[in-house]
Amino acid sequence: MTAVAKWVPKEIRELKAYHVPPATGLIKLDAMENPYTLSADLRKKWLDRLEKVDFNRYPDPAADAVKQGIRRVFNVPLSSDMVLGNGSDELIQMVAAMVGGTDRVFLSPEPSFSMYRLISKASGTRYFEYRLKSDFSVDSTELLTLIEQHQPACIFLAYPNNPTGNSFDTAVIDQVLEAAPGLVVVDEAYFSFSGQTYLQKLPQYENLLVMRTLSKSGLAGLRLGMLMGHPDWVAELEKIRLPYNINILTQESAKFCLDHYASFEEQAKQIIESRNWLMPQLKERAIEVYPSDTNFILVRLPQAADRVFEELKENGILVKNLNGSDPALENCLRITVGTRDQCEAFLSAFDRVCDR
Image 1 (cartoon, rainbow, N blue to C red):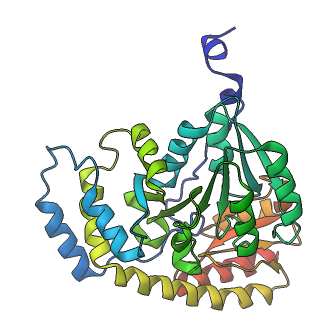
Image 2: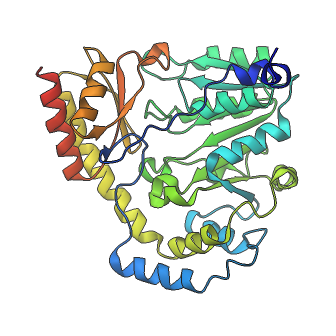
């Protein structure tokens, strides 16, 4: 037995690391990033602010100014508190550390965001999946039966869902919140494109935590996520949060961007317009296109997705190949909505590949 096999738990060794493919020289439509950047004027003002940062000092440990900006921009209820993390991933880790364990269960619909499963297993927590229907909607009776059966410490609901792009019925989410014995984390990573939120329901449900990220809004490089909920839950999460987890450059950049958030909202409108243009274009090509409330579109091809994916790369386009990741995603590709020019370049490459 090697030292790794001896000391690393079997559950960890069986996991697959989250893979990010290289994208140098490609039009990058695989990671749900905002294709736009700051205007030249805002970029100069941002750099002027960063020039004054004393990065020899530790950052504000509580990131209070960032939290104030988040409260202002997203209208967080006054009765709710928040904790910040390096993207949503660290926040999921905090939740797992707080309520997970070998005698606990986490539950999530599948297919969904892969980090729910990965972090659950990495924390030693048992993970159960609820299989979505063929149209990726939820059968509430079946889900509620699983909740009753497994008594999960935490339920993760991506709203809208990734990688399917659809939003679950709010009546179903309400039922889950009423039935859940533990926490329900509603992950609103794509709020900028759906406009749908459970944030204002936080005072109604003490077991509800709402998670957001600035990554999809155009700040993916900052890695800033936020988790809002009842102060008692947040107080426990703060005990787990590592000191100074939000670095000083991220804090200053986030404050600046929140002060100019109208620019990012305008970019989101452009992305929605591109999405609404791209979807009928894809449908005309006789492929199955799923509804989307996000900045990406899930499609199912009538031919081998692996070949199309590789040949798109050869034509300078990188999308996400989901074939083989889940039985429900056979021959599926996920296409991030880029600029209009990028969408047209994708369609041109797609036509060349599929005509072969």
